[in-house]
Length: 213
Image (cartoon, rainbow, N blue to C red; front, side, top):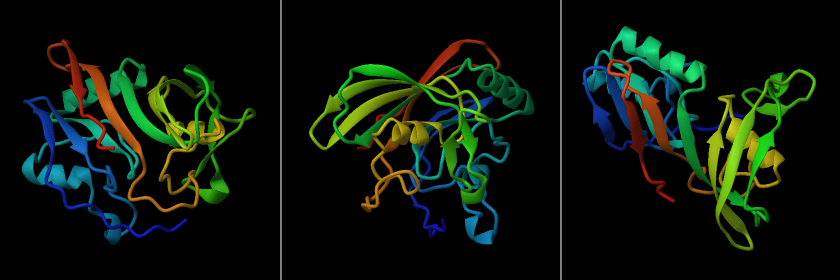
């Protein structure tokens, strides 16, 4: 699936800055890291390095997802933060608007995921070869046509929240890969909160950016 890349030109939205970490509110439509080809070179990482030359990647958000991202400013901080992500010690909370009225108040989606090689970057549920993928969800509001959910991923698989919502029968509104064919201004998925331990002090930190939809 080929989609034209027209990244937003919003100024950097810095939520926190110190000698060790940088926390940013990523806009929807901007790649976290460069894609393949010069036309996909513009990304959040390259923009940050103009103002903060030592910026190092720790994790990613999908191009069409907005919200809180943390970057390292030293090699040590990058290693410490990456270890927290690998050990699932980081708590991530997302907000999504999904299609349809969700009946239950909360639940756990336990569906293993694997890349759909013939349709990359698409992922798919596969009980034979898929890797463990867990998502807790909580209904915030619901109407006849759509619902608002809080999503808490317990694992960090590629496109996890998007595939899980689709498999759950409530695709994320505006999702260009797993959603319905209706065109929306953006995908309604936002990384609202990130909880980590500071790589230098070890103190617990909470960073938050309210969903813009």
